[in-house]
Image (cartoon, rainbow, N blue to C red; front, top):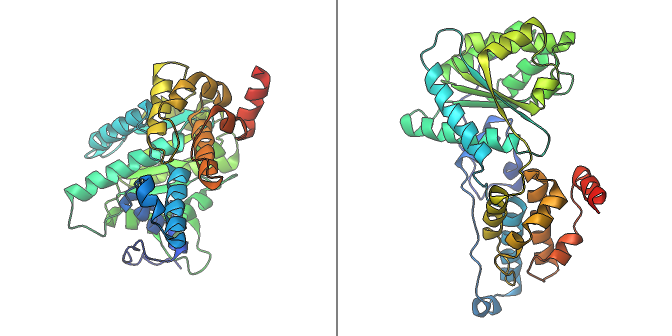
Length: 345
C-alpha cells in the first residue's frame, strides 16, 4: 500500500543532533537543510585574541576552521553560472507548456563539477520559488535523486518516493508508486526534477529502457523541468535508439570539462585561496602556483578542491597554518590526478 506523504516536518536547527547534519540530499529533509543553510565562514582571530582562548575554546575555534576547509565556499564558475541560467530559462519556458517540455543534460568527465553545478542551480531555483510563494511552506519545488547502478523503472520510482517521504507500507507495484509520486508532485507544485548519475542508465539494456519510459511518464504527468547529469552521457547509451532520439529532441546539453591553464584557472585558484582561514598563509601563494596546481590536477576542479582542502586541513592539524609548494607535494589526491602527476614528471 502506498499512502500520501505526511506534512513536512519542522526543519532541524543547528542545535539538532549530528545525525541530522549528515542527511542526504536525496531526502526531502536533507535537501531542505542544504537549501536553508548558509555557509558559515569563521573569522580569523588576531594573535592577541588567540592567546586569550582557553583550551576548549581553541579546540572549538580550530574545529570550526577544519569544518570550513572541508567544505570551502562554492565558487561561481562559468559552468555553474551557465547551468543556473539555463535552468532558470527552461523553468520559465516550461511553466505553461502542456506537452513537449524542454530539459537539460549536464555531461562531462568525472571531477568537472557537474553535481555541484546542478545542485547549486536547483538551490537557486528553490530559493526563487520560496520568495515568490512565501506562504506556501509545504511546497516541494525541487526533487533531487540519483540513478542507482543497474536501475530499473521501479527502482527509479522508489527513489522519487524516498525523496518525497512517501511511505511504502508493503512492496507495491510500480503503478502504485508512480501514481503516488505524481500526486504528491502535483499537490506540492514541483517544478524542477534533477536526476544525477544518469550515466548509470543505458538505453541499450532492457532495464535502461524501462527507466527511460518511467522518466518519460513522469515528465508527461508532472509539469516540471527535468535536468539530468552524468559522465559523458552522449557516449554512454542515453541518446541511442528511438528513445534516445526523443531525449535528444527535447533536451539541451551543457558540457563540462577540465579548465585550460589560463586566466580563468588562475582566477579560480585565487578565489579558493581567498576563502582560506590560516594564520600564517601568505596571500597569493596559490595563485603563483597556478601552473603547478594545473599539472597536479589536470585542470579538474574536483581534484583542485580536494588538494587545497586537504592541504588546509593538514595545515591546521600540524599547526603550520600555511599552504606551500612543499606541503602540497605531501598531499595525495585522487588516483586519476596522481596518475597524471606521474606521467608529467
